[in-house]
Figure 1: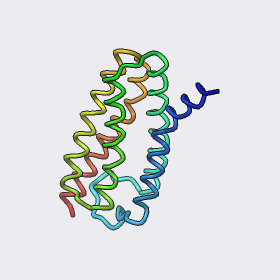
Figure 2: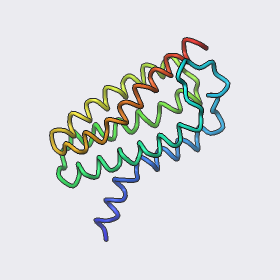
Figure 3: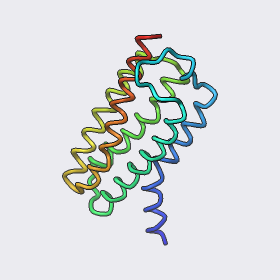
Figure 4: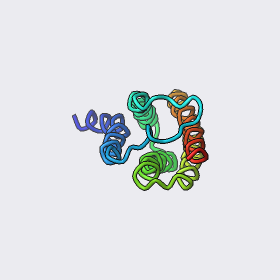
Length: 150
């Protein structure tokens, strides 16, 4: 039973963090009020995409942890979760849009590093993070576009 709780924690932690952040930023969302770059999706797309991505992130970590306990990889994983969570607060609550570009670029580097680390231990975990990487690349484009246009 203890093992099942640990596995559930690994899988659902990103979703729980994302839900808490979503709650914290809900009163500060100004996405629809901003001049948006081409290809900017409607706001309804974001919670759907992030729910799927958080599940993939959690499953990737779960699969990694079932086969490895590498400290370096675990540290990178939790740091990127922190950067992921704080980006939304920087962008939507604090509205420091230029700094949020720097922050999301660091997040991108952390995701790439995490994919590399996962690949060393559990290739499927690395592959499961590719949609996350692509989405954050797209989010970086949106972040830059919103900063420039607003």
